[in-house]
Image (cartoon, rainbow, N blue to C red):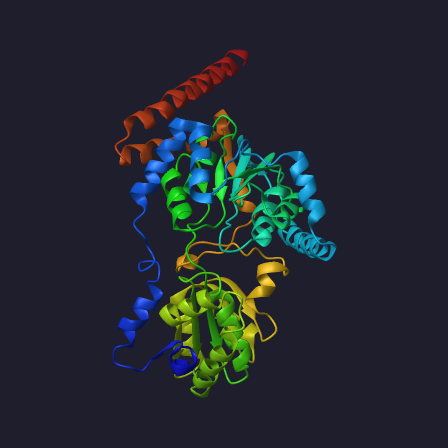
Length: 453
């Protein structure tokens, strides 16, 4: 099938075409065409877990994961045995990745601060970790020890007291050893065998066996994303995750085979993943299409990758590099690869991207596994206003202030005026009453001084 239509593996758009604006809008609006209507079903699952607790949860694990469980939590012995099964070289690679991610996130941890003003003004901000967080690690189509590392380590770095992890079990009720190994080195405290919307519900509301958390982070399918959205407000969540995506900006210095490999590296995740190549070099188009045809059949997940590339992949031909960067900013990609001669210069023009991969020797896989920056990134164009997962996601900030009488006397009249502007006379009265006491005390002090004289 691929051989007969090699030139059509990816749709090609030309930026100077009459209908380009409409077609490009459709590409950028990828969130809208991947939404599945599961709201009602997810709401039912959440309600069932809230009312039925562990029994309902075990029922959903059996229904959706095919595992019949006595205990939802991974025991200490299970955890030890699983870690012992991991190949030593794999264990070393997971450990090295965890070390680099930990090092990156330690660089800039927000701290508490305070300031004092003349007249008795004292204010500032206290920064503390959340008490308990839940990490969702997907399973099903693949195993993701790297997601464990990326989700858990920022929480571990700021010393969240309890880090819980939920991940779907295999049919025999076990968790893949590599996932449990990653959980151990990343600082996870407890692991629960559950996935999907029911796992999100259990973490959000708690059950007999599973404690309620303050925040849930981590990617998942549409059921997980919808459940996180529905429990938001009961708990905090990170940015709403959608299908993965990559946008590559390429110039004449790019290697077609490498571009094709980078496009496929995201397409193999999911049929709904999106791979976009933007280039002003027309000659690259055919050569990249040819490389896609050659490489796709060698992938273990070739069927998934081919469906993604055919249905959602796009190559955009522009007039120059500046236009390519402009379109990349409009797309606001989760992963942006700058396969250009001067990637550092080009990166300074990028304002919307989850993560930027600069140069020909920095494929997305570098960031996925070993570089250090977090690979939990905003998707679906939300890089316009969301950021990568970081230590800040596991911290809360509380502001504090204290005014002594001289400071309130200095600013009180303006506070009352602003309250009256907003029609909130009660606000003003709460200040005015105190000002009256301050003035009265001042008059009494002045009178006492006159008597002494």
